[in-house]
Image (cartoon, rainbow, N blue to C red; front, top):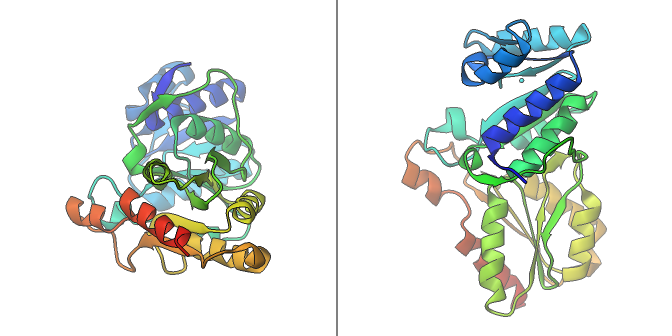
Length: 292
């Protein structure tokens, strides 16, 4: 099984899908330069650079999709897969690092994906390209060059299916993107104290795998939801509401949400890192829940 980074997994998915379907095209700011191997194989008509003008990029993508093509646009395939980077990790400020996934979950008809591993990135991007609906595909900046094993061949994952990456019976930790890894680190620390945490990687924020969340909470009776985005009106609030409506009687303690502050992402790397949930904060929250 080859080892790829998230960045390489995106390239592998694009290559395989462009070979499979001649209607798949790729364009955007710098894509033909950064992914010259696509130009070498598929030519400049299917892979091309655009001006640094997001309105032009998005408008061209919509027009191409309306004519039957499947554009994957440097940072946008319509049926519209928009590749966008987000999350802490580079300390480059709100214009690049601010987590905006909750904004787009509110858009009817739009699917929203944010994987945490290179394998899931490739499999979900291939599924998104084949989907007939618009998909916003977030890449976590802090994970972009982290390597991981990726299955070879035509491996896809359905959008809307979460993964239980660690089983446990005492507390459920739900997250997506980089904070999935923080939850796994927290679970390791908790295990040393006799607390078995179950870790769920949402992978897709919309559609949301409600069955996986509710099934785990009904087993553990405790829930911590973690994301880097602002805690206020974030994905965690929706999940907390879901559990309150559908599994309230199964709760042994109130739901805990861990998220970023109601403030723009910091351009200072130390401030940026201090503003997002750490593995230690996640473990502390889980310990408090398990003591009630």
